[in-house]
Every structure is written in structure tokens, then in C-alpha cells.
Length: 389
Image (cartoon, rainbow, N blue to C red; front, side):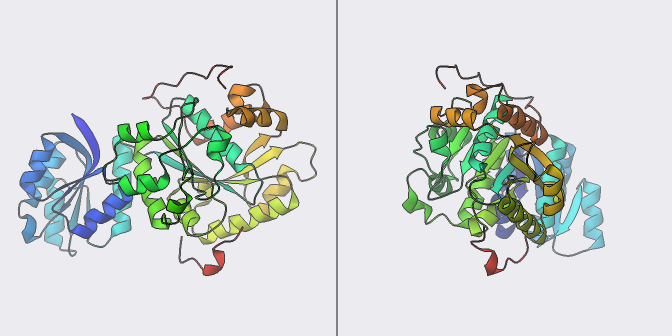
């Protein structure tokens, strides 16, 4: 029987809206009442369910909870108040959790936990964020996406620079279906249609950007970008974000959704100081220390700005170092290829492989794409943060 992430039974519109925003329109199914829920269960099995209890609108709610729980579906019961009798009845019926209406953040986290425990895992989002311009973030993002794809993962590389993104040029691809197109059509898109619409690199990853449709990008605000990322998350094992160049609304909306942030710096004083400021801002925004990984690009052992100096200045450990090999990178970019394809023995290829292993294991349920042939190669954010570098 087919499965899907979330079934919402007889919930108020605001609860349904919250969950569709968090998990995507394609991932949340709604049943108006108990009869519709039972009919839905005959066709597919949800990985989790949300059922309001103790309300006249859904008089059969406890029976629905019991039926879902009986099939092994973890259920969140939603109530209007902390009524001990209703809570006890919901738990006896088989509900795993009882939450109050309006506890939106707890509801979202609970559903995430249920999905993780059931193996119906949502994909992870990794944001590559340069401490300042010229850090080589796009090089890391493109090659990391390629390596993760080669390891058997479904990967989407999303360029969130809505005006001057470089990813398509780096990979010698022509984009036709844009971020704005996904935002406008998310309700009717499915995985197959998206796969056929978005360009795919020879290394295996799909590449989504604003293409040349700059005028449409003006209408794609932070909420729209957030909606696109929520839509992409369940369709891919990994979503890699490039094009984050500042701390404006779009970047912050993307960073808020990221499971991890690769803070990229180099062994230069201005870069390290910028990384220090970024790390401080991330802490103020409430990002967990484990969520942020400090990456030193173009690393050279002979530099006077050592790993220890960088760690002391930025105030966090270096998670990865990418060696310096300009010649191999230049050949790869000019060929629209990955470093691994153009120069597999390069220190850059080796180090990005190590970074990919640190981010996630090979996907057990996906076949790795063939290697391309040689010849084919936060809290309330002050306005002062917006536009910072």
C-alpha cells in the first residue's frame, strides 16, 4: 500500500494550512470527517495523523484515533483545552500526543519526529553560506551536490540568487523552469513532472534556479522561496542551497529551514573576520551550534592563518577543509563538469568527498547514477541585518 506523510482529519483550516506550509501540499491529505478518513485509509496509509478530539464537528474522532492507531499510525490528538477527561480518552484510544490548538511549533516538531521514527524521512536542506564574496561557495555547492548524487541520493541544487546566480553557468546548463514557476505551480506539481521540467546535470543532480526570468524573481519573496524549499524537501534526499549572499529576507527564510549551514571562509584576515561576524549573527538568530559547520576553502598548510587561528577567531571548530587546486577547478568549470570527473585525484575532489560523507551516508533506496564519460564532461530580526555581508 502506498504511504504519504500526514493525514489531517476534520481539522480547522488554520491547522491544515500550517501543516501544508510546513510539509508541502503534495504531502498532506485532508479528510473532512470520519467517513472520509476511513475511505482514505483504504487507498493509502499515512505515516502520521492529526485528529481534533472533543469537538462536536467530529463526534466520531476517538474511533478514528483508535482505527489509525490500530494500523500503527502515530496520531496527534488536538484539543481546545486541557480537559483531563478528553486527554485520557484520547490516550486510551491510542493517541501518541495530545496538543492544544495553537501549539503550531510543537505540532510541526511532533510530526517531524513521527516521520523520522517511521522511516518516512524528509530530505535535508544544506545551505552553503559564504562569509563574504569570493569564497568559492558555488564551487563547493555544485561539487557537493554532484558527489551526494553520485552516492545514490536524489539531489536538487537550488540557486537562490534570483538575479545573478552562477550555478547554471558553472554546470553549462540551460534552465527553462524557474523557482518562480515552482512557487506558482506547487499545488499541481508531482515528482515526475518536476523531474521532467528541471534540468539535470550529467552527474545526476537536478538544478533549479531563476534562470533568465529575472522579472519573475522580483515577485518571489521570502515566503515564496520558503514555500519552494518546503515543497522540494520531501522529493529529494538532499537539497543544496547556493546563491545566499547576504542576510536579507530571502536568505533568512532559507537559513531558517536549513538542517545545516556550511559557513565558508578562506585563510584571509577579512574573510575570517567576516566569518566571525556571521557566526555571532547565527547565534543571535538561535541557530544551534551543531547546525553550523565552518568550512575553510582553498586551504594551504603553509599559511600563517592556521586552522587554530581560524577556530579561535570565529569561536567554533573547523568542520572541513577544502584544499587549494585552482588549475583543476578551472578545467572543471570550463568543461561544465565536476572536479571529480575532470580531476578525480585532485585534493579538492578528495576533500569534498569527505565533506559529503560528513553530511550524509549513501542512500540505501536509490541507485547511484553512472559517472559521466571523460569526453562528455530566528528571532525578531533587526532591519540592520538586512543587506549585511
